[in-house]
Amino acid sequence: KNGGKFPDPLQIVLLQEMERWNKLTIHMHESLSTLKKALEGSIGMNEELEGLANSLFNGTLPESWRKLTPSTEKKLGAWMMNFKMRYDQYKIWLDEGEPKCMWISGLHGPETYLTALVQMTCRKKGWPLDKSTLFIK
Image 1: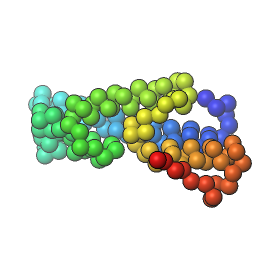
Image 2: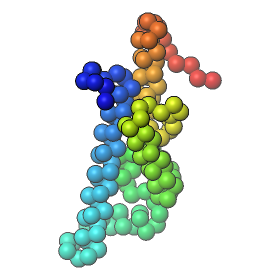
Image 3: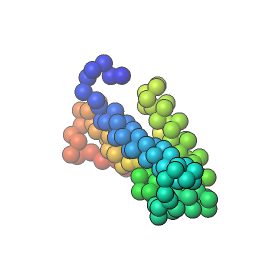
Image 4: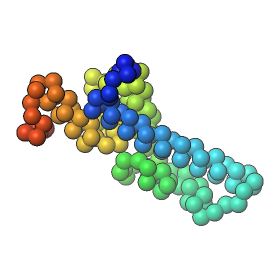
């Protein structure tokens, strides 16, 4: 949506976020589909599928999903609520452009977003990037 121009740093962050998001959602879909087949008896249950089933039953985040998501200690229900909020933020960012208010902890790599903000500000103001930093109180 940038008219064929080279993406700016914030657009690159969005692309990276979407790549990680897609990897996670594809894995979730595939693992749940495979678990369903195992529960129906059309394929055999293995240790990974048993771990997935136990995690879902106990309301904890499955280990294979945890590896593809930002670090969290949340139980599955709270994690799914954040998953939905991340989806909503990404959708707004894709459909309407960068949100006016960014939920930083909803990003997979919040530090890359903050770095991109510094880069964009330096470009806009003509400041040297190597002499700029972000200070947060």
